[in-house]
Image (cartoon, rainbow, N blue to C red):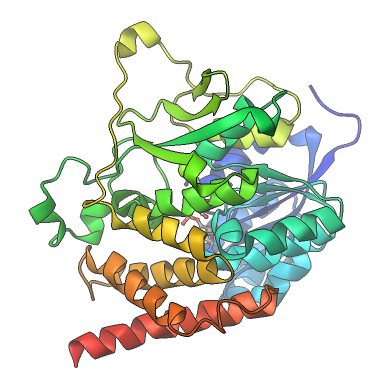
Length: 395
Ligand code: NAD
Ligand code: MG
């Protein structure tokens, strides 16, 4: 069904896994959408191809050194080329009805805030936005009458299970975790795990960073905090359960004992499409589950010794303030070092914990008022402290 007036949409992180799935849905009904901005990183060929095909107004690469290539790739197309973080924010401030936030990492925060300030509906795949700056983001949305819709599969599932329900009646929220690449590895092997091994997800096809975060459960740790912010529930009402099949995405438990589960094939186009068409449901090109063929679904409690990230997330929620920004930035920096082969898999959590300890011994920093500037400064300092902690260990 095509709306009379095309909806103006922008996609940040268009060249990534979520971005490409979003484009797949939009490209199936081109007359329904008027594409304002697309953003990407180093993959200029993909960005330019999609910008031409979708007739975007502007294409932005995050990297200024790529502007020349982007201009060349867009020559004669009528699509404007831009680069750098200020250009991302400028593009996000251009009026749009619906904006996909699918940059990976804290770099997604500033464009997301700019989109909310112009009143767009922000489809949030970038969980880091809520982990780093939940209260600031929610307040910005409120002030500008903008709406946030979840795209993370668990949060989309919870959101769907809550339609027509009163939050007062919610007893608990249970998010599922596949357990990632190493869920069946003996603990002793984890210390020697490589980035390549961690980047092989058993069920989901996602970007490299979130896939490694799934193996360490830092992804689930971020998602617990995202749940807390998105649905405004107490941390002790949020549970994680390991579910190897990734068919049940989340469950909501109510005061009468009912547990509403959301099931679906592990395909992000479901959650993206739900956010795109909300509050309607429309046909989506996702596989339908054959429960009889599946036969059984399994669940087990997460092993705390295997997944220290889950304990660290609880600590961050108890501490509040800017500790989410510290947690996320320290994790991002430690992950950079793991991908580069500088540290082992288990060192990621050790470094994040060391940096949290250091910030907590210096509480003035995390208790500063939350603004984009303080979040950004805290993020930078946390990254430096990861490097300092590594230098100290090496020395
Ligand atoms: P990806 O690595 O496949 O894509 C990331 C995108 O961000 C690319 O377009 C890349 O060019 C861009 N980018 C990278 N660094 C950037 C920077 N510094 N500044 C601006 N842009 C930059 O990642 P993804 O798997 O699509 O994940 C995107 C976001 O969605 C993440 O926050 C992730 O946690 C979340 N998410 C992803 C999935 C999934 O299935 N892939 C599921 C749930 C949530
Ligand atoms: Mg998720």
